[in-house]
Every structure is written in structure tokens, then in C-alpha cells.
Length: 306
Image (cartoon, rainbow, N blue to C red; front, side, top):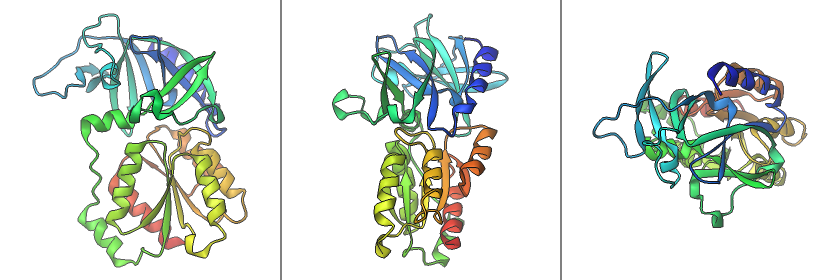
């Protein structure tokens, strides 16, 4: 699928966003197992180009190449997920993605097609499947298991997970007594949750954690009546199984005991449509992942506004 065709296809799927539905680009990594990635993260699918590999590159990097005038890293996704590497496979394809304000390529064996999935059909993978943290959701496509790659986990393997707040923002947090307030962190990525929890601990903010929107909504409803357990701010990912961030925000605004909560949507998904949907569903703010100072500053503002 060439760049223009894929982009046209992605554009045609934007209506799914905000309705607890997602379009997935399906691909394989050299074996029968199907994998998927949200089409909103995909810029283009290309035949594997010639790659430049330098000594000292991370083992999971197959090299780099010039993409529209910019040198971008290319990650061997098969190797990252425990399959035989694809860097020497001349029939491999390259999926160019925009993720957390950066552009990178992922080597895959081949791509299949784009399919629509409902949030309800996606679920957290059982540990017995053996994916570990590299997959954050699974579903069935025509009877076959499809695993959604946790790209944050893959990138963190290469880049690390540091999430320090700068001294300037830390001083702002120290000026206010934020400890009586609590924040709910909602994210299906183990790496993302770890980063956020570390950041909040730096500011002495207590947090409650949920792994998807459905779990978060159930927790919030149970906690709404307890004064000692009350949540001040909900910080939620957008792309999650069962109930996504948009649907969670709508549910919060539709629940009388919850609708006054501040809701910040925090996502690696790029695109102007995010800002529009944030307003449509009633969220207070949208922040692209992962910018520690901006996230910390926003959390402070939201907590003090309550």
C-alpha cells in the first residue's frame, strides 16, 4: 500500500475515533501470528529500502534511512518481539509511523489489510500467551488471534524510560501542597504507567492506577461516595481496550457524581482531529506523549483548579 493510498484510507477511518472503535493495520513478522497497530500512527507503508547501519547502534535498530529529507531510525520489530530478525530480509516492508511527536520506521514481514475493531472486542492479553509487555491488547479477527503491539514498550527498550521533572517545575510543585489530592492514571501500557507514576511521585502526588477505561470508570464510581478516596484529576490514555479515553471521558461527563472531575487525555496519537475530539467529548486538555514538564505543569494546573 503506497503512501497516498494509505493516507486516503486513514482519512476515511477518522470517523471511528470517539466512538470506542479503532482501525488497525494488520501485519505479520515472518510467522503466522497477526499483529496490529493503530492506523492513526501510520504515515506510510514502503518496500524495505536500503538502510545505513553504524557501529554502536542499538541491537534492535536495523539502521536508518532518508525519509522525505529527514533521517529516521528503523526498528526491527520482529527482533523486538522475539522473532527472527528481518533486517536482511529483502522482501520485508517498512511501516513509517509518527509516535509521540517523533517519526520512525518498523520492519515487518508483510502487511495484510486494515480492519475495524470495537473497544469491547479488545482485551488485555493473558500472561500465558507469552507476549509480556510487548503487546497491550488482543482480539480475534476472523477467528485468528491478533495482537496489538505496545509501541511505547518497544521504543522504551531502545530509548530508556527516564521521566524526570525539571528543577523549575519541581519548584512549582513544591510551592503548593498537592499531597491531599489524588490523581487517577489510566493507561494500558506498562511502560507509560511506570513513567507517569515516577513523575507523580517526584511531586508527592498520590495516584490510583487503572489499566483501561472500563476499569477506571468502575473504580471512579465506587470511589465517588468516599470523601477520603476522592479523585481530583483523571489522566487517561486514548487508545485502550474495552473503553478508550474518549468513551471514558464521555461516560464521566454523563455521570452526575463524576462530571466535575478534571480530565486530561495523554496520548501518542498525533493529528488535529485529537484536539477536536477532546472538545467534543468534554475533556479539559490534550497532551501528546511524553513531555514530562508539560505533563507535570498541566497536572498542577488541573489539581489547583479543583
